[in-house]
Length: 387
Ligand SMILES: Cc1ncc(COP(=O)(O)O)c(C=O)c1O
Image (tube, rainbow, N blue to C red):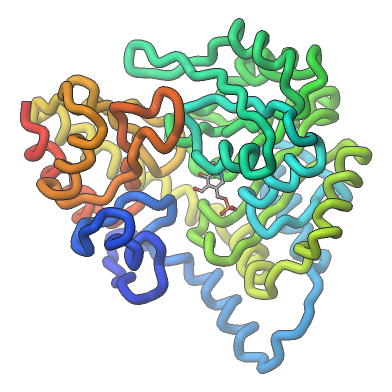
């Protein structure tokens, strides 16, 4: 029903992905497959809702009403089998801001925050920007896939106050199993660690995988968890700065809300609310088609890597529209890998080392682009790294 093949010009639209290529890659012509937004049109039902509201000529202070909240509750129940209560929902102007709010709310300078690298890099700065310490429980990379080192996680959690969980995990694409999540939560409960579960990629699940919101597993786990969700990745609305925190524990919720209030960032923006409600109300079929298309793009990349006998290895993602590529067999260092990608393959990818420990030797590619772009990019990448 939807046309994901359509090429939409994004140059000169103040797009970070396109219009910051010179600063990022010292080259304005690379095909940008880095920042995690999509080159697909935001669905028509979202655009129409925004345009309709924009036609009213006054954009004054506005509320997020009952229909906005109900659209979140219904989405979370239908998509993720999790019944949430309207009182549990707290607005945040983004999930990275929410990580920072959590740091300010639940820790003090010098406290440790636990993360699982290689991981989305703002997890680090959400601690270090506030003089908190990062405690890393690096994921185990074995046989081309990632698992959790639970013994290490247990040791590290003894000194931590907060745990930033990326679920599904960016950049490895892991969808944590219920069993893995229970083990993580049990360790956090034993050690009084509060979990901030960043589930921004929760709707972007590839076929044959199932996302479990960690807080949906039990009331006890929900009691120590702040779950972060947003329509931004799912519907290509990152510029709308609108997300939700789901916090069933009233004490945690009140504390977090009071920090958010004290920073005066709970108003949000009027178009973010309109877009979020339209997306969560009408978006079921669109997301299903989106992930089928992304899965097709992944097949193109996988097939190109194998038919060209490339020395780049694909870490099979279970979710997200990104793929984590292992360049270790090339024997090159990170600078050389990056240089070849920019200057020979003419691509702009996300550089592995920015994801922290375990990121060296890897690059992340964004596959949320029309098939022709992904096909060309895959060909160029494989040619540049011919065995
Ligand atoms: C794991 C993860 N969390 C958060 C974000 C960004 O969230 P926001 O734009 O709501 O701050 C991203 C964007 O790539 C992400 O991958």
